[in-house]
Image (cartoon, rainbow, N blue to C red; front, side):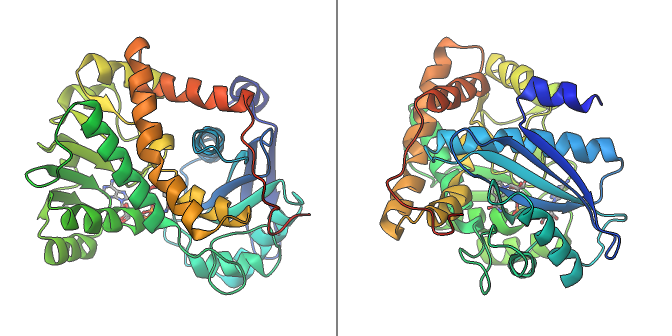
Length: 357
Ligand code: NAI
């Protein structure tokens, strides 16, 4: 991969590699944009097959964060970081997290870290022992796990999809297939079950599937078949790049609306192919912004009422993007255009950041 070429193509400002000899930490922070403000984005802790794969992931994820913040009308930029594990499933340590915290601190507030796949609130608090530029912990830093807000936002995105298709806003009688029963997926199950939907679920962790079956009357599905499940809405809530052109041909849904970042393998092409196939794709970075709104909003000094209002507004934003897409090749393109308009008309906040400086 030609890193400068990729950075230029996607418009990244800064990409930093770091290694810590003492702990063995190897990590990358990618800042896509600080045009609208400091850039908040999670730290992913993952074993990548190659270094290139990690770089590709962090570049795509950080670009998506800029669009996500802009669509959510937050005066924040976009960034993300990855910790490259030498082997899968390696337990996290305080020393590793603190080394990551020191790396984050070198960005002097341009980058604010938070949870992503593979790290929890404890890890966030360990990082926060070394830097003020972290959100999402429970003791040293604030905000807690943002996943329930991400799940709520994704549900709001589903409401918009039903409205866009002129269907009744009613989950009784609908079947939703959920891939991934982690922090977000399980909470989405709870919300949908409460709303009366029937659930089909898959996870590579059998215990999580069992929990969803017990708690939400979900029907289990083999992880290899969940994308082809017959359903009203397919909600990918595991990892990214799960739906490519071949998968689109085999879908048995007419709505894709999930929380995973970068659901589509080739966002523009695959979103256009979905549209052609009569499948409504709700752009991931529009519908999964609930967690970002929560943590970035707290960072910016917003109160609970405003945060709730902004998370509810995901429904109207999604609807607006879906309507604009009627004149374009895809809903993804409509969402990118929507975000770019927001870059041009810089969102503002009258609040002073909690952790300025
Ligand atoms: P998590 O790590 O808690 O859960 C992911 C789940 O997916 C795990 O239960 C894992 O076993 C399962 N999984 C992995 N590969 C799978 C496969 N092939 N088939 C079925 N299940 C599989 O992660 P979390 O926090 O729930 O996030 C889920 C997705 O949502 C990620 O893509 C994340 O980047 C995205 N996201 C999360 C936000 C949050 O607030 N946590 C915010 C915005 C996006």
